[in-house]
Length: 410
Image 1 (spheres, rainbow, N blue to C red):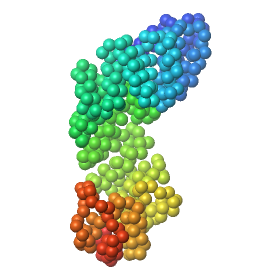
Image 2 (cartoon, one colour):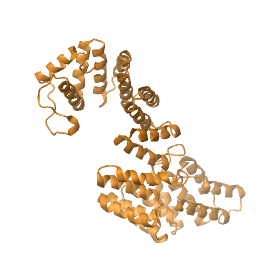
Image 3 (tube, rainbow, N blue to C red):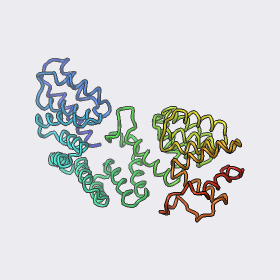
Image 4 (cartoon, one colour):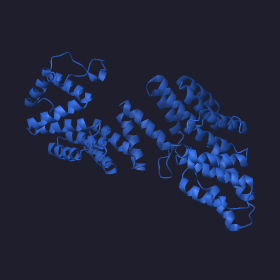
């Protein structure tokens, strides 16, 4: 981004002409601080710049830049409250430090001090008129108070008319379009515009969500958002391609493995779905979402013994989650296929008692099998009716009859 280039030039000027200690070692200490990346290497920056603050004979402008670096580092480390005193000092030493106003504004915003944030962003804009970073920051801060999607979108559209390459504004606009439309089509178009610029072109876009050099960059964050839209709109091929890119570049992204598992399931690659579920379990062994993804794949493969064994292992831990009823449901299917009707019925009862969603699903299965004759209710349509009465005699009789039918829940 343009501001990143400006900062680099300013730091170079400071390093070349403003350190006046006359001590080569001290000059290198200050230079190491100012040329480090507070965004990518927060801990290292704080350590190096703390040493630079102890250099006595440096100019106020240089000391301001050192405090700014520390403030930036704490901000990107997720500690805005600690960042603000350093940014206060940076502004005190150099009242024309637009970047210090900018970062202090974002720190205030993260602490929900909206009026203070807007005041700082306004100062930043006064120092750098028509700066897209300042324009975006003010619009973003204002939107955080009004929550008016249409007004925020209009603000972002006006910024992009003059600054089409300001990618943070375009990403924010994508989110506002989703808010206005209730779906992701215009959102997808804006994300595609960012990604079309290429990873190198947007590499300097700083966003708070990144946690250091090894975490996903802005390109990956935008791609992950696009993958979610493809997934939600059942564009499985496109979703799989994005999730594969994310996994290839950032194998630690748990959600990418889970989502690709279900995407592969939809396209018939059940072995691949199981492999992704196992990869997710390797990352987070106790994650119920990964456990359920594995059971889902095993169920399609009809590996009943493996389903029972794995479900037993998970349930034996005593760990409960909103997904636990579904684990009982899958184990119930495996018990039924193995001919253990009593165990199956017990698991199904636990499943429907523990989750209204599972109760709806069971209601639909029993209706499709011809064992329920009450008015058909499809939970996918949100009919607004009362919850399924799992204690009703008709429902319990239907579940018992299902246990005797090889075609029911097979």
